[in-house]
Length: 257
Image (cartoon, rainbow, N blue to C red; front, side, top):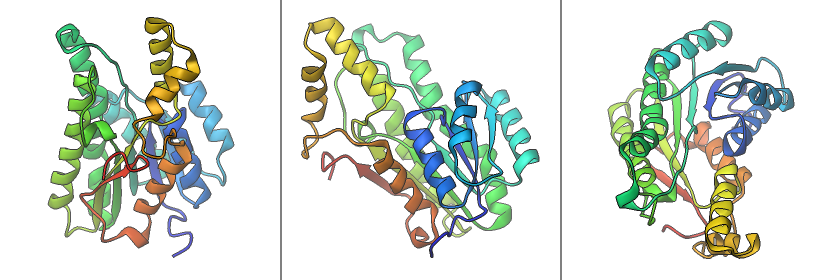
């Protein structure tokens, strides 16, 4: 089943950096034609220039906005054909004590993390149903499998992503489409670096001590690497994972079992 992604059109949201960029690189290396979605067009172009193969594209989008998603998918479909693989990676994480969590923060976390996955799946799914084959992979989080203090809005959104994954997987189970979630633990991304900087700013601890505080929740006592998350996505998108659907696969060094 080597190169089972060869020629497949894969759409990756939040592809300008971090996990999304690594997923795009990994799928391209497997022969997929990748369309990178995000808000930062210049950063998307930089990632596209690094991808193996040819036929890759970019499209600017705000995944929390229905009209923006509709326009982006219309454009990418015209440029590269029907969508066969969708990786809903776009996301944000903001922290606040529960009583200081504003409605605006709450809606922002739901919008980009949960509504964005919903809108993009709705936009991509008709192509998959027409073809009788498709893969949807939602990047959730260990926050969607357990809970963390001070990130109630983010945690609620990621729990919602897992619920969406399970429900949609059952709905399309007999139609050749699989729907799964990958749930990274603390991963070496801008989101984690921002969190570390926040701890340093509030507590005066060193950067190394702050990073160690995040790593300690991982039984392996390490930070997950984006390539490890991307490889789980690669497998779920391939033919070998055809019987895997509705799952929430934790990439967290045993933090969630």
